[in-house]
Every structure is written in structure tokens, then in C-alpha cells.
Length: 318
View 1 (tube, rainbow, N blue to C red):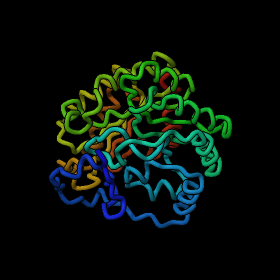
View 2: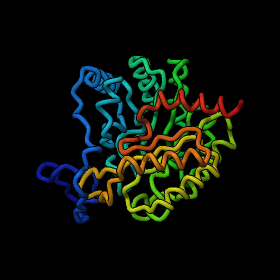
View 3: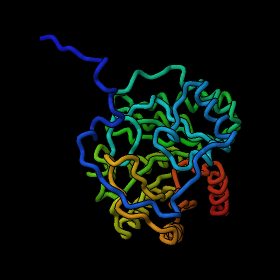
């Protein structure tokens, strides 16, 4: 049998091939409190040029973060390693899905050079899910951490990792590289996992965060969820309890925003006063640091938050 692939007249491969045939999902109009300015500053352009010059990807761009203008103006970029293509197809995420390319062996060093050029005191490194790799990309994370340590010894390092589902020993490899903050997001409440995050397992993610602290209690742990996906308030509070049972230090809560009509719809825009309420409740449950607002994202103000996180731990130890 001969298969002919037309690479001339066929359209380019869609960003989310698994969502092409889904019906459109309409979200309500954005309220005033969720709007941001378009990025057009000199600092933004400088950051973009450094990212491009080093051949890197950022989750700021790939996931369509609403805070990209503010962060890049301050030369704060969140690097996304292991390519721009994810092996999973979460209903909320705008990162491209499909079969990724082989790992770039030069990427850890390229990331370290970009961190040096940007003069970052604190850097956040995340990645796509790489279920195609035997270790889920754990060693690549470790190499990137070590490269940054060598190039920028004073820079503190925060990582936002996949769940390394069914990758025995992967977590241990990453923790051994000793990042300052280990972040793994739950994304939503357990009842929404089948529709929002079908490739993941809620209690595996909880256990992953708990295991980090067992391996190295000095590492700060962090997790985050989105609201507006159909969750109930009591479910959000239960997530808080589950995270505290795993000794997680830092919780972020932000508003889900729909990337395209093929993605999960926004069920509700949560008003700012409800975010303030969540923050107060979370602090009563024992988190050292909480960030809850419509535009909160995992790496938003990460450097400033890390300083406050260290201060909170020191105060609690007195």
C-alpha cells in the first residue's frame, strides 16, 4: 500500500488537532477586572529578543498568559523547556499538542545564558508534559538547574513540573538537583479532572508534592488551581486541606481564561472579593504564602513572592 501525503495543498497541522472537531464552547464576556494592556514596552521587546536569540520557548507565550506585558517589561520570563509540544491534551491549556521532537542537548546551557543576560535574581523553569520520555524529562530538568547554578550562582530557581506519572524514580532525580521551589499545579478540583485534566490523577499529584518534602524538607513546595471551571467553594477548600496534608507551603488561585472556543468554557468569572476570601481561608489553614486574584498565575511575581515565602518560614521557626 502506498500512502501519499500532500504537503502543498493541505493546511498546516492545527495547534490542537484533538480539539478540531469539538463543538465551540462560548464563555461569557470578560468583566472589567480581568482586562490587561497589550504588551508594547521597550523592556518587553528586550526580553523577547533575548528569548529569540537563545532559541528558547516560554510558557508566557505558549500558554497565552495575560501578564506577559507586565512580566516581560521587568525582564521576568518563565522558560518552558523540552520543546513547545505537549504529549497531553488538557481542556484548559493553549500549549501545542502532538508528538514532540527529540530533546535539545544544548537547551540547559542556553537557558542558563538567557538567565544571565536577563540578570534574573529568581527564575521559573517549567516544561511541557513529555510522556514519551522514559523519565518524563526529569534529567533534563536537573541539567537545567545545574547549568543555571553554574552560570548564575546567586539566582534562586523555581521549577514548575509535570506529574511524572508512571515514571519511577523521576521525581528523585529532580529533587536531587535541589531547586529552591518545587511547584506542581493541581489545576482544578478532583470532580473536574475527567473533563479538565483527563491525563492526570489528582491524588498522584498530591502524593508527588508530599514526596518532595519527604526527600528534602528544605525545598519550598507550591501548587495552584484555576477557578471558574464549574467547581464549588467547598471543593476549593477541600483542595486546600489536601495540600496542607502534603505540607505544601504556597498556594496560588487564579481565574481560568478560555484560550479558544475549542477549549473548556469559562463557567463563571469569580469576582475579586471571592479571591480575597479564598486567600484569608487559605492562610487560616496554615499556608506560608497565598496568592489569590483573577490574574494570579504560578510564576506571576514569583521573585517577590519567594522573598516573602522565606521570610514567612523564618518567622514561623522563631
